[in-house]
Image 1 (cartoon, rainbow, N blue to C red):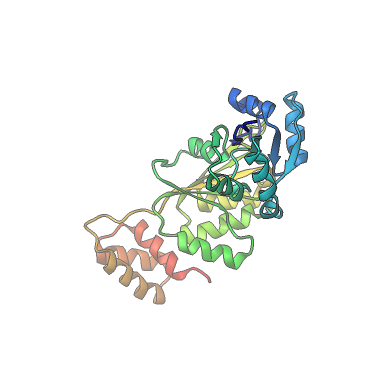
Image 2: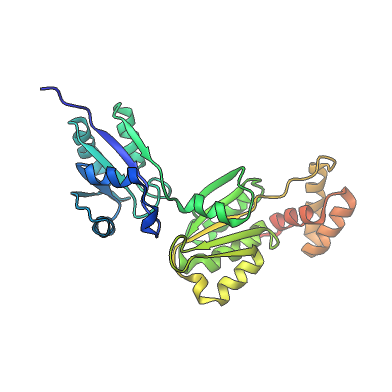
Length: 283
């Protein structure tokens, strides 16, 4: 008897609104031999809401390495498995990478069934440049590690996208303002596609203030989009500006150092100020 080769379907599921589930995704979930889920309880609730019932297999951060051989064996035996995360597109700050890599290495077809994603939804409504962007997922929870990571991103010219937990959003935005500059434009998309969807837009300083004061800001699923670092005009000697900033920032307040550096080098005050903040940020 010839065994038909199985396949792994990576299925995007709604991030809030069930109406966003596509026809192909529904079909894949209904026909899969089993649904491989990050949290089987949440996926069972989703399937029930869709009127579906399928066997569920858990695959999360703590068991993925151990679970892959079993799943690979089922795929090799000819089964079709559907991989889902708790919401949105799998693998984006969610488990599944090891399984996809193993399946691809074994020449088992891996099929993407695209659909909802908080990453792309936030970019679409943030009102910031989206021609080039950099997805950073969740920043480190520990303050020192988070600030170190942001320091490395301070000069990144692409739009930055982060996920963040509600209880850390105020501290995260304050650190973003300190590391990237208080005037950097940003948006925080909250509860996308859900009843209480809200998009907050403004400078990092303004958003940090709102997060500290408004309780609703600190609720629900949050995606943070931040404009990239401003690029120096070609007429400005970038090396001279950086050296000037280094010298002035040691002796003067940030605003004064930026103003003098701009006058001496011909750079804009905002560019000079962004560099000053990089040199005066706390470790």
